[in-house]
Image (tube, rainbow, N blue to C red):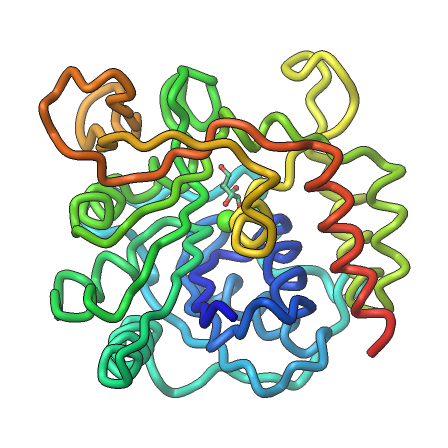
Length: 312
Ligand code: BDR
Ligand code: CA
């Protein structure tokens, strides 16, 4: 069983990842640490509370963290104008965030694990501001973190948020670089891989088997269409963040390579991630870079986990 903090900025694909994790017995979700990203912190926190309420998992705390990046000016996601999820799409619940800040929650959880001779996993599926702050403020917390499984980066210039940068890294490149160089093992799920698994309207339809939570997810993906046929050459869109949860449950769905990775933090290519696959830099590997996914297997796993909400 993985003890996991999900550090997120929900976000429609964050919603899929969170609901997937909450339905998976292989994962004990210690709590959600929330950061600004796709939308402002006020809205990402409200969305996280709605998701926890929908899943019926009132035991899972929601912690509000950083409201903006460490150094650069703030940027939001493509759908920033939507704010929090509309009540018509995702039912409003009565869950409220914890009084404890997300950074403090990460520090406390990692230290508690280390004191027991254990380690937690962090699934970082938004800008990595909260995680970087925890590691800067108290470097000893690294001892309590087994791995940081991060959705972020692009190793070919895929033209996502900028010609070079993926959104989570671009939104806080300094935080990402701190996390990558922290010494904690990193597992990276870049766009090069997440773009390989495309969900179509037929797949979204299947989310509806998952009770209220599945219906909400269906509503979100039906409203915020991620397909881009010009880019992908076929119908469907990625659900980036859920790959982090799938990797914990079923790593055999993925192929990966070890590499030294880093981030450009300034200039035109700010947010660009590089991976030294061919050992040109004389630096030891700090990351497992996930390069390929079994599309059919991943899609089936996500659909099957969301459907489990229907049985609750
Ligand atoms: C990432 O950026 C956000 O839009 C998504 O939630 C995902 O975490 C993809 O680049
Ligand atoms: Ca996200």
